[in-house]
Length: 511
Image (cartoon, rainbow, N blue to C red; front, top):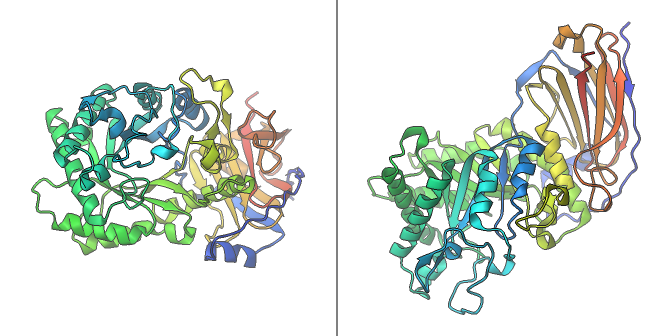
């Protein structure tokens, strides 16, 4: 008879009362299917697919720019990013009054605060910093494969005629800025034209008004590519429409406008949008929806798709429980996106922001000065959740999961390591996961022992929000050394909180 090893720990219940803004299957089903145990039997010999890199796409902000050290911290925490999304605010780089460029502007200096005619955009929420733009781009360019640059501002001023800035000026500013930064940071690869154009804090425009600027944007990108002789895999790619809210309706309008554009060299290299606070059962199937729209307008269906901003719950106020809500649900959202929309890459919101208004979406907090040290930054619970996802490497192991379930279990196996993760979306539960055929998966294990490390993210662990002495990050709560008897291990955790995450890292001891 095969023996098994039990790893048992008890956590403390943290009751969280969450007021949900509306009913959807993502919430109701969780209650209907509530059980007292998260239980799975996992056969390590059953590969499912290469485990998707769910932590490889990062978002930054200029509303409160992060300290330059954050790029390095990010790579050390999650691995090198595939794409990091950065921003270029045209009215910070170019002043309409002097018509002069300041390519290395100090970020967040509100030089238009006393000018009534200037559309405020998102200036009211921007925080002045000692960080300059070159340092901002450099800090992230050095820690990713490619940069996505979102270029915006001045659109409403042009449309209203309130300032002496024309459409030709806008294209000129856009082009010269992109040309300048591409020469310094060659891994700028993607360019989004504008951001959430329907919102007052940005362009406050119609579909037709936005398309005017999209056209100017792709013309500018095409000209930069031509001037720099960028072709094939080196060419800068341009896309949009960077919409939020009624995403499908706005994408439909954008594709229609693009299909009617008679410009010979019109360009749409990728499609991007934002998904906030939407039922995961809906967002997970975006790829099929958008490909249907592209087919409707006889446009290529094989374009890259990017959700360039996302978090599962997007409240206007900040409460402690919202941190754990997003920390738990983001892995579920990212996982089912990868399962049902594998061509869609998701950029969660956000590495760092103004903590007075967006802490619940941030991965890190701390000072944002040019000389901020790594020791001054803290990883928040959501960052710890992303860190947990980043540990998954190699092959995903087949596990029974359903998008409507109130739990999620993820398992991956690489050359010499197993990662087992369980997330609880319902009421407090015990976790019991039976891992079988370890010796079949790793025949080289022989008589070597296993090192088992256990981590928790909940109200008491991986939580620097209520424990000021905790430095932040993914917290190790238990460590054991065990032999493998019959190739099976049973992992158990008692009383996993609602929105709690438990993770085990199993590795082989070589000596």
